Structures are given as structure tokens and as C-alpha cells.
Amino acid sequence: MSLLESRLETLLNQRRTKGRFRSLKVYPTNSLVDFSSNDYLSLTSSPNLRTSYLNTLSSSPNIFGSTGSRLLSGCTPSHLALESRLQSHFDAPSALLFNSGWDANVSFFATVPQKDDWVIYDELVHASVHSGLRASRVGERRRRSVKHGDVEDFKSVLEEILKEEETLSNSISHEEGFPSGEGQKEGGGRLKRIERDVLRTDGGGGTIFLALESLYSMDGDFCPLLKMLEVFDNLVPSYRQCVVLDEAHSTGVYGKGGRGLAYSLGVHKRIVRLMTFGKAVGCSGAVLLGPETIRTFLINFARPLIFSTALPHSTVIALECAWDLLQSSEGDERRRRLFALIQHFHKLLNELLSKTPSNVLRLPYPSTPQASSQDNDETSFISTLSPHAPPKSPIPPSNHLLSQPAQPSQPSLSLSGSTSLSISLPASSSQPSTTSEQTSSSSSWEAASSSSIQTLTTHKWISPPVDAPSAICGLLTPHPHRLSAFLLEKGMIIRPVVPPSVPPGGERIRICLRADMSSRDVERLVTCLKEWVDIEVRHGNSDIPSKGFGVKAKL
Image (cartoon, rainbow, N blue to C red; front, side):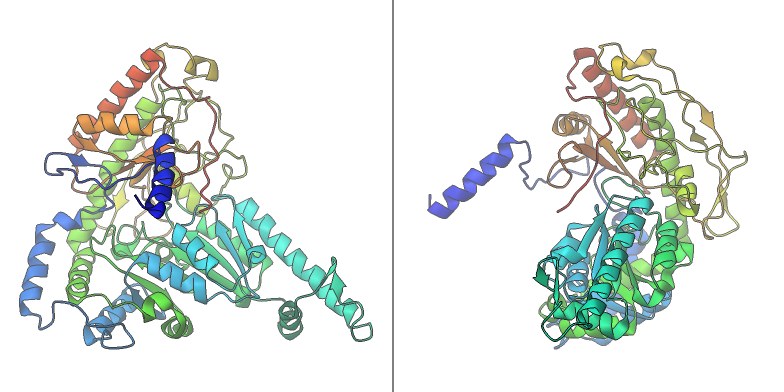
């Protein structure tokens, strides 16, 4: 073994010891139910999409590689036509295709923010944002994270930035009252010329970027977008703002015709949006939507775009066919089926978690009161339907339900304004069913009280605010590998998620629901989870304290 291989093997063994080793596995999905797939609308198994795709391929003159990058031979009429379609569909000023969401994020954050700008990002944004920022001109001091989904922390960070700029501006004014070379030191060091020049020319520093995701992939919770924008508008003039929203997990699922969260809330025209095609769209690639100037800038400076072969014709054709379906009545029906399935799963899971010690299995609720007290328009509609909206009060040590606020009866979930879907959801019990002392005992969860069920009324799905649940559910457990293996024996693929994908203490299994799953599939899943919980409680196998985890991922 070479020196290099020996060193690498040592590092791999360290991961094995910590239970963080990863490997590639192929499962016989024809005999297993796959709860790990991001194919939320089950488009990859759609007979209609398959037929449409094959028919289009058979009549297309070009079906293989694009033969070059977009700046060479890879800019074809097909690529431009798809960009034009996406620009129109998403109601955007311009559209630029990328080979992946990773490439798009890295391209944007490595090139667009300049060294005099600020970048604020939610601490759970995708790793590609961090990779882009590390390659950018923005220094580490000008990159600020905010607690996940915490509007108050975002406000505090903004106020800190503005205070720093005010201090710098005052220092410049003080400098200019001295002879040349005097008074140019602040805090023991010379003020950076770029900062002085920027403040002198525009009077307020550079652009302040805000990087968010509409739906976060590990917790399955939604971004409090409207409240974040409200804070931004109250503190920063619009000409200094640039909001970048990664809609990877909402593309195709939320908004009319799958246009995403920002479109649903009516704020899409002020946001740079990343829509990806490897999840609900069932293909690959991504599109960045925003001002024409940003598109032109990326064409000139984005290395992943400049030095990569463009999407192959077969993928462009697949995307055209996929969006035909997503904009059709079948797309509406698939979204309707998915949301109904999620509601059913939430009801069953609520009943289980209401009786489960939180040190055995729990939801990834925020651990800070600030993050758990957001009361605004968009989180109120999300908390109605999603288990992952922050609760309205600090987390008790025992398990929480997938809690929802009280609502009138006669629910309806409408996709087109003419077809309704009746749903019912569980509500949290008035008192937590399991205390921290009880979680360390060996008493079975059957002795705990059951959750109550109430009926909710939802708004029409096509009009903001959007009432729609998350297809992603993270369940925290100290033994994710053991639980994953147990479920695999029962015929279900559910992957464990461990550090560094999540921080220590955030180990979990991640459940994804898909439109073509049956109610029997989710019923069997919850039955198996119940069986595993019973074994864990009976044998006392869980060994972590019953406390809330601070879930962060600074990659």
C-alpha cells in the first residue's frame, strides 16, 4: 500500500469508528418501498411521461450530447427554447440553465457577491452555498450565518452589519479631518481602501445578500420568507438587497404548476431563485432565475458554466416533457395525492410520537425560543399542515406532536379552484404525554395518553398563503443505523443521516413520501416504527438525554 493510500485508509477507519462511514449501495427497489427518494411526485415512474419522452426522442434530430459548453457548440436552439419556456413559466426576467443545482449555487456565490458586499445565510443552507462563498471575493468577516429559521436573529445580524458600517463611515469622516497619513487607523489597523471607497461613493456599503432555502431537506421545514423580507425591508433599502432562494425541494410541488414557494407568496419578482430538476421534476439539471444582468455576468464569469459541457439533448427533451406533465391536470392530481398521503402519515405519526419518549424518537424542533416563536403569515399556514413548523412555545423535554393550531371544520384543499380534497389532521394534546423522568424508565409507550384529532380548514392551494405540507420528515434517534437496518429488514429503504451531513446530536433517519405510495405503505411504516420504539423502550437501548438538539450544519 502506498503512503497516500495508507493515510487515506487511516482517515476512512476514523469514520468507521465514529459510525460515519459511507458507501454506495444498490437496493432491489422492486421488492422494497423506497422512503429515501426525492422523487416526490413519482414522475420517474409515470407511464405517461415515459411515453411522451420516448415519442419525442424518436422524432428529434438530436438526442445525444450537446457536444460542448454553452459558450462553444453547446448553446443550441433546444437549450434556448427551454430557457425561454422556464422564464415564462416562472415569471422571471431571465433564465439560465445549469447542469446541477450544485453548479448553479457555486457559480452564483463564487462570482456575483463582490468583496465589499455582505452575505447573510441561514445556517442550514446547502453545502454548495458554502463552497461558492469560500471561492468568492467576500471575506469571512463579511459572511454571517443566522440561526435556522430565526427571524429575530436575522434582524440582529442585520443591525450588527449596519452598525459596523456606521462606525466605519464615522471613522472615514474622522480621517478626512486630519492631514494626509494621520487618523487613518481604526482598531489598530489601516482601514481597507475598498471599504472607504465604497462608503464614499454610495454612502452605505455594498449589496447585502440573503441566502435561504424555501424547504430545508433535513428537517423538512419551510422558510419564514415573508417575515424575513419584512425585516429586510425595514432595515435595508431595496437597492442594497439581493435575496437568493434555493427552491430545490419545492420545485414542481408547491405553487401553481409547481412554480415554488416564492411564486405562491407573490414575492418571486424580487428574488433570485434556483429551481432544480433532480427531485420532483424527475430529471437532472437546474435553472437560475433572476435579472438579465446577473445572467450575463454568470455567462462571463461562472466557471462551472464556462468549462462544462452543456446538458445533453436527451435531458433537455426530458425536461420539456416533464414540465408538460407538471403543468397538466396530471401534475395537479399527483400533487393532490402527495398532500393527502402526507396528511395521513402525519396523523399516524402524531399518534405514535405522542406516546414515545423523546430520547428514543423525536422531531427536529428548534432548540431556541427565538426560533420557535415565529408568528407570521407564511409560518402560520405551514404550521397548519406541516410537522416541522416551529412550535409556538419553548420545547419541553418530552416529545412534541406534529402540532397544529385550532381551525374551523369542513376542510378543503384545492388545486384548481374546482376540485377539493377533504383532510383531517391531529392536534397536539394539551399536555405532553411523556415527561423527562418517564423517558428514562422502561415503561412502555402504550401507557401514555393518545393524541386528539381535529379537523382543519385550508385555503385554496393556488392562492397565497399556500397551505401545503412537507413531504420530508426527519426523525431524530441516537441509533439511526440500527433503525435503518431494522426497517430494511421490514422491506423499507430509509437512510440514516449522520455527521457531517448533520451535526453531532442531530443523527436521524430521513423519510420522504411520494405521490405513488399507498396509504398502506405509510401505515406499515408507522407500524414498524412503533415496533422498533417498543423494543427500544422495553430494553432500554436509548442512551441519550431527553433534550432538544440544536440542529446546525456549518459545512
